[in-house]
Image (tube, rainbow, N blue to C red; front, side, top):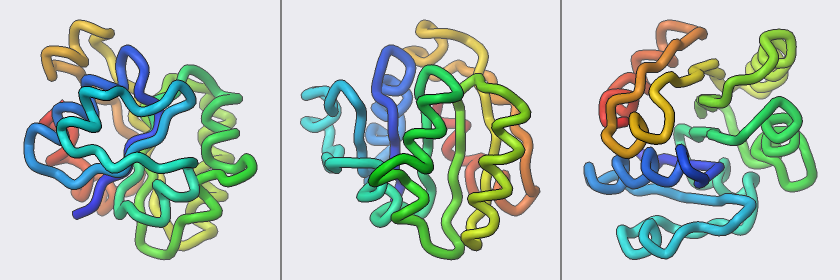
Length: 152
């Protein structure tokens, strides 16, 4: 399964690194660029969220807040432009529940699944792969994403 990761800051970079270390193909994009260490591990650099969504079966999003998630998903060259039916978006950001419901409906309308999966554990948890995920969404989408949560 091809994975995508958008948002490679203090949380996202180590999380993406664990996915790469487990041997997964990873398409990556971040406002600050894809860290060299992830590129050395094999991350494929994408120029925008649309490109990540075109390439990946599951797109993980780990950005700071609601406006950032909205932009990553629905802004110019956003992930929604690259999604096709059957793909899954996993938003791991801690954002507004009202916005989350709207985002999920809009992604579902594209024939895709959406998981709201904020994390607990902070930077140390991300580095040590001991994060706790609080996941909301369809059971089928959760089953697809669960093996990857276990790596992070």
